[in-house]
Length: 403
Image 1 (tube, rainbow, N blue to C red):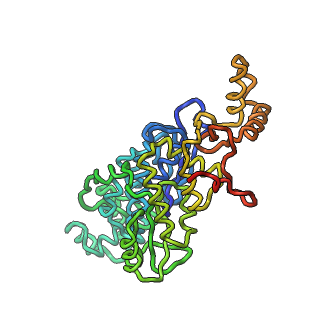
Image 2: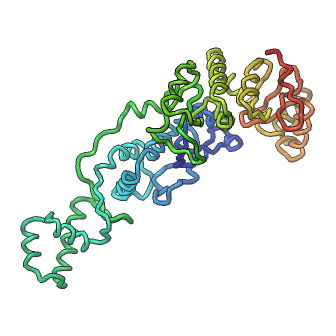
Image 3: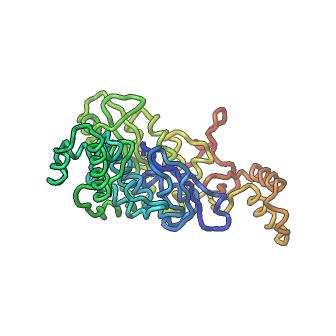
């Protein structure tokens, strides 16, 4: 997703969770979210270690977000914040100030507030009780008694100024209002409950492996414009693609807004032919029908280990996936050294491992064994042959595969 609200570090609850900790930017698409869970070896985003690293909004207090929260709820909260316009965003921050919490606020309640920003009435350029009292007086929003008393007071006198301040303070306290950097804010109207179906949708996996935003024209800073862009789910029939392009004119471009394999989004953006993207999406959809999560993660690890940044190469790597094995428990080079040495010497003392020396041995064994450490774990071919490599200047070994 384009607009980043939170950066959060996530890790599993195991004793070595810190070694696979991942940084997740929120809001995230379903694919981005679960990719981060896979890298961090987290089985359930509701129960894991997490800590907020950064909020990309100077006006949002980080103290309201607790530690080790439900990641699904945090992602929904980020989605809701990203969807607010400027006025709604100011209303949300004002609602938080009205809460007057010194510590974290439950995420369910924070999400609830995002649905009620329109209940926050903002009165710009009011900075203190006297100005609030004067605004109420000028707009005849005070009681008849207060209006009559002010009408009798000498304009701009000290008495009138103090009376306006007292009346403004009383109104603020009665309505639970606050002064913000945008002015005075208070609740006006009834709050409505959160939309539960939308919350449940966060856990729903989208059906399309690739989703494009097809846009009339192109700029480096592409922004969504409903009049000039459409979302296109791939794979799609050719006539559906033609309708999508034809509906916005022939001068158009596309970018990937979601992909089941997040690391390939840039490769999709670099592709000039939408038909090639559609062919890749069709093949990925076909493979997913027979893949489980294990195969999908192995494929991601293979893309990383091989340095694959091209869609056609990525499509070819889907074939023969059963030739590879992934070991998520092998995280560091010394893990591989321990794994290899204990096969021959099972009684070696633990003190020999998790040292710089064992890490160096592990790196040498990885090179000799044609294996690679990825963010998902250790990847190697079952027969010990070299892994595919797409590093510039080397021969592409993938073309020798039986497709």
